[in-house]
Length: 361
View (cartoon, rainbow, N blue to C red):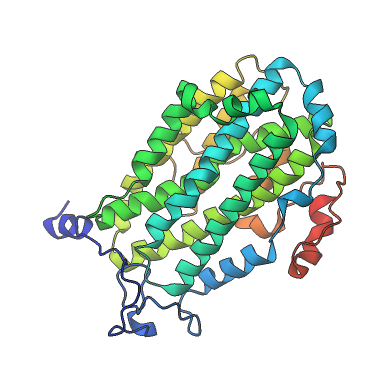
């Protein structure tokens, strides 16, 4: 590494803590992802990063309300699950609630460094949806679980070693110290990018499998599919943030290094957790081997979407009926024809009407 490159990577980036900067400018020619000029008063009359505005629109168009999804049948379905399936169900909900709970605080960290108002707006909307997701998990747990099991189930992540290790790794790479450098911010962005895809996957697919193979937990699964769609759009947002940040700051050579430090390790940690919760391979298609291969497939997508090749490149997933739900380039057309129609007769956004019926058929 040359001296100039090392100095650039280790340059401290100023946190945008000031409520306003009246003497600075919101001009387009000085707008950047990070390190641009800004008054810190959100001016969205001028847009430099169209993809950020598109992200705002997509997220708002897909607004939904968790308490409008009927979970009453899920109460009976949960009682019909085996003891092992109930155990995995609670483990999965603990993992998912931790991740979205983490994001509600974490997104403010990276957003405080962003100087482009349209990107900051997209992240603020994402944060709002992370709260909706937390409300969804709490609604599932409060509705389905007996009161005496609720506390223990929510905090499984404190006691389950492999889940704790996965979470600890994420926290380490998401944390930004006071004097964060350009390299620190790149690491944090990549960690968000991986969290929104790899870290959520196993939990989503477990509930899909219950619905597809056993016809159970339809309400919970309908809610999870909406969350899955949201998380894929968040992953896409961070992909664009990373691409433009890297270009503007001249960090092309460092991008692959940071990907290699985070994604392969996260894949391994996900596999270790899955190997524990699916110890008996009690599903035909959703087993340790297939999920492990699917993690490699997702990692390959994460690399390729940033212009790089994953060392263990995997171009297909063994979970073929879920492949459409993993394609980061097809977020807007997420569909699952293998699902039965569920009751969605509540108002989403009027802009979602065209997608609504085909999404749930």
